[in-house]
Each structure stands twice: as structure tokens, then as C-alpha cells.
Length: 255
Image: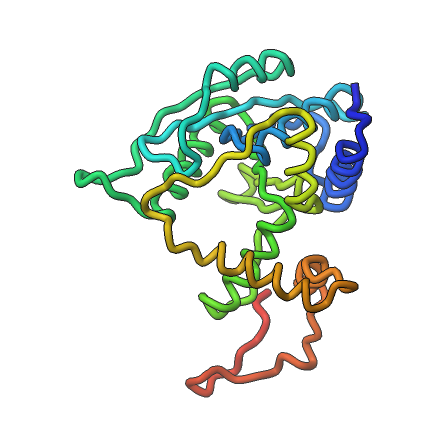
């Protein structure tokens, strides 16, 4: 049954639009859904399971939870997750990985890389062709600004991205959904919001960017700052980008 609450209806509509705009789900797809246990991934698996019940295309879902020896989300009730998967009628797999070194330390990059590696491995074992991640609109906008400011490049998280020569496709059905919508929906259905407890991520560039976007929005209350940033990646004005790098080489848009 579809969620009929106002916030649930808004999320459902935006997920449906994303699926249509980016052709995220096709007939016969076998999709691994990465579920951390937080509000974003649980919202994603709930809505995808609802969509599966009435969608005109036939596809399969597999919920996957990766347990690491260090987690930025704190402790996760895996028994509770399994109950949710069973209630939704979604097959599930749990996997354990190690992300810390011999001194018990890690980095956000290394942790994320190992989690992604485990996801791809499970997708292959399950015969899945797609991996659904719970990144929402705020995540994409923040990543765009982080890459621009800290890496000096124009790039973002794609709603649909083929990997390994097309063997696996990453999809982000929440790409049109703002974090505030998910937070409100999570409160309505009782999903607890996890707080970061990672001792290696105290100084967060992402939090700085998140605060920056919020403050920029306060200065322009009638302007949708996040949507403007989101749309900018598809509104490239190449006539104003014929510039040269610091070493004098011409910088062109990558194909």
C-alpha cells in the first residue's frame, strides 16, 4: 500500500520522477539496496518495496547491511533491521568487514572504499545488476560544492552511474528528495536519526559546506539555493568556460 501521509506522498512523487527522468529501474532488474540503518537508507528501502508492489515493471530487491569494525553511525540494531526487511518482504544479506588498521585507526575514504567494495561483491554474488544508494539531494549538492572548493573540479554524484563496463549500475532514487523531507517522514514513522560517532571524522568538510548552504539560503529566503546548485551541473554555459589553467594549458569540459 502506498504511503498516504503528506510527507510520504511528496517523497514518493519525487522518487517516481527520478526513476522516470533517469531510467533508474528497468524490467528484470535485480537491485541491491545498501541499508546502513539510518533514516535515508531505511526510507529508500521502504519506498522501493512499496513501488515494487504496484510498478508496471518487474524487479527484485535485496537489502544489504554492511557491518564494519568502526561505524560513523554508532551501533545499529541488526535484529531490528532484519525485522523491517521481513515485514517489507525483502530478501536480505549481512556482511562483516574490517576498516581499521593494526592501530585501530581508519579514514573516511578507506572506510567508504571498503564498504563499497563489499557491496559490489555481494551484488555480484546475488546476480544483481544495480546497487541503490540512499544519497539524497542535499548529499549531491554538498558533494558538488566540496569537489569545486577542495578538489578544483566540477563533478557530482550521478543519479545513475555505470561501473565496471556496465556490469553494475549505481542508482540514487532519492536524488530529488531533500534531507528535510526524509527527516520529517522518519519522525512520522518512528525511524531514529543516527548521530555520527566516528572518532576519525570530527573535523568535517561536509558539515562546513552544509552550514554554508544553510547560511546562503538565509540571505536569499525567496531563492531555492539547493535546487539552483543541483540544476547548475546540467546548465553548463560553455561559452563562458574557455579558460586556461595556472600552467597556461587550456581547460576544457571533459566529455
